[in-house]
Amino acid sequence: FSSTMAKIPYGTRLVTSSSDIISISSFNLLAPLYVRPIDQRTGEIQPFAAFEWVKDDDLLRNETRLPRLLTCLENCGTDFICVQELQLERAEDSHSNSSDTRPPFVLPSWIKPLLSKYQIILPSQPQLDKIAERNRRVLLADVAVTNGIFYNLNKWVPD
Image 1: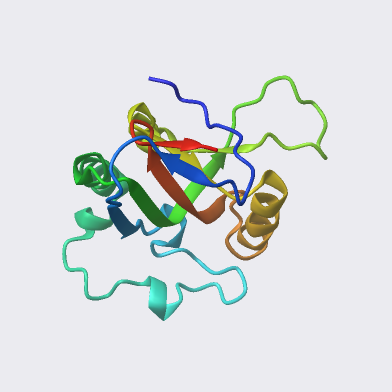
Image 2: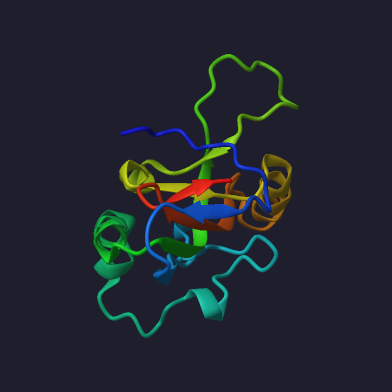
């Protein structure tokens, strides 16, 4: 499968190659960055991010949670999968020695298998950099947490 993301301009209309029926799933992925982080402004975990009601801490661990999420996403089989709190990471870039030029944001490896059946629409890199600025300041993490729309490659194509 391809692990690259297509460059589709925002606002591009998608057209279907088959029936007029559209199926959509929506998932809040809970970005790993937001699971019990220490807020640099207070030095504490904010109450909304403490997940005190979770009795089994293993359920919040990425090693447990992310593979289960991928299975759900792969098995939903819908035309569009809308995701919230998708945590992107910086591409590994050994060519850039400049401190003012950061590598682009890319999908995390755990979700890339979804690209065998879907393509994704994401905000532009400048928008992602703006999103990441808050996370660098408040949580000391250079990651962008965003929304994305996966669309089924077998049914939808950019027009």
